[in-house]
Structure formats: C-alpha cells, structure tokens
Length: 201
Image (cartoon, helix red, strand yellow):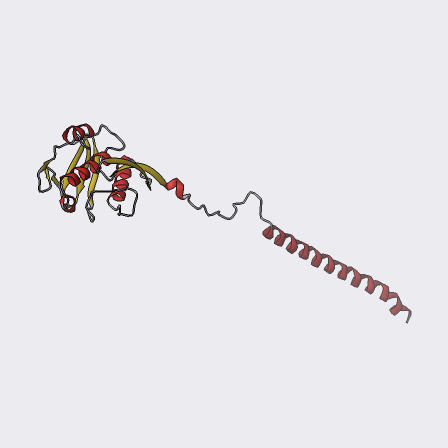
C-alpha cells in the first residue's frame, strides 16, 4: 500500500511534463502558422502594386491644320480644322485632305470639290507635295467652280509650307486641263502661280 502511494507523485510529474511539452509544441506551430499567414496577407510595401489603367486624352491625339474652302463669291477662305494628329507632315496633310473631301453643305467650310472625290494618294517629296485625286475631281461645275476647287487643293496642300510646289494628278496622270472649258493647269503649281493665273481668286 505504501509503495503504490510513493509511485503516484512520480507518475504524475512525468505526465504533467509531457503535457506541457505537447502544449508548447502546439503553441509554437500555431504561432508559426499565424505568422506565415500574416506575411502573405501583408506583402512587402516595395512589391509591385496593381497596374493602373491609363485612359488616353483625346485632345492629345488631335491637331489642327489650315484647310481652304470658298465663300459665297467662290473666293478662297482659310479655316482651322481639327484633325487626327499625324506622325509627320505627310500624315497630317493626308488627314486634312480626307477631312476636306468629306465636307458637306451643312459644314461651315464650303467647297467646290465634287462629292465622292477621293484622295488616291498624297506624298511629300523634296520637289514638293504630290496629290493624286480620283476622276470625280474633274466633273461638273463651271469655270469659276473649277478654279475654286483647284485653289482649294493648292492652298490646302501647301498649308504647312506656303511656298511648296504642288503636283496634282488625277488617277495617276498629271492634271493638265481641268473642265470642259479647258482651264490650263501648270505643273507644279504654287500659290504665287495660282494668283498670277487666276487673279480674281
């Protein structure tokens, strides 16, 4: 009876020590797990943030160019028109001509260029600006209308360089005579030459 009573305290001490060790181990594992989760949920401040979508400014993609229309007396009048910004003079002129050729009667910029006239090509070279238009450019209208549309092309093409030579083709062929009344067109044309040839404009 006495021996059994002596063993009980020793057994209880071992049991308590084992339990304490187990609790400590479990606590350590729990603390490590919590710390690991904390690191995942709170990334380093220097890590890349979510990408921010940048919306382009429409104004930054616009430019202005001087195009020439006609007033009620069929005289040339300049108009500053907003166009899509080009990478160079050639692209800006192409965008400008596409705008000029789509002018309607409701627009403030009046035109003598026949509807459905298309820009076949426009290139800027060392010898001047080469403009190629579709066959519709030569159709319809009297002599005043013909001179007016010719001036529109010459002045609009040279809007970025007023002294530039302007070469005008129709469907790939040099324009020499315009209209049924036989308006002679010299090649290349310039603003100065246009004024000399058609002083009324």
